[in-house]
Length: 137
Image 1 (cartoon, rainbow, N blue to C red):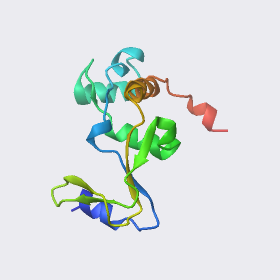
Image 2: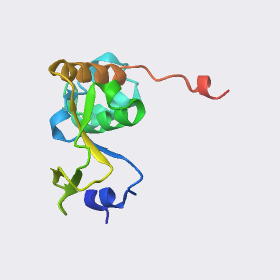
Image 3: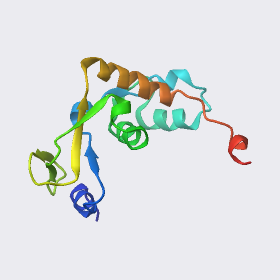
Image 4: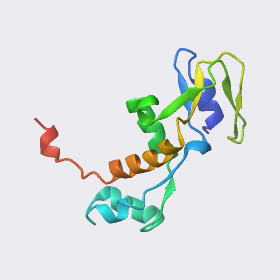
């Protein structure tokens, strides 16, 4: 059986880990139920999971965006250099400011960045899917 603790501890030290945590989650998703066609499979999956016009925390989309664009491009700053994330067996996370791991965590670079993040992620969710024909050449 897998766990967050096992996953975090199994990452080799040569691989940098960036933790986002609860402090940067913003509510997203409700616009997806209004900005796309009812035939959009992403919209339908979201509606099936939460219902229409409801937001949810954005941990996963933020983590993916950081992996693709980098923290700076997402208006986040990495902090905690030289520390490490301690994860309990139950999955609770606590940042330890020492330990020399290749880990950091992120926080918003400004108050405005929180609003920007919400708008950016909702905008990405509302983008129409591209045609498969475009990618089959």
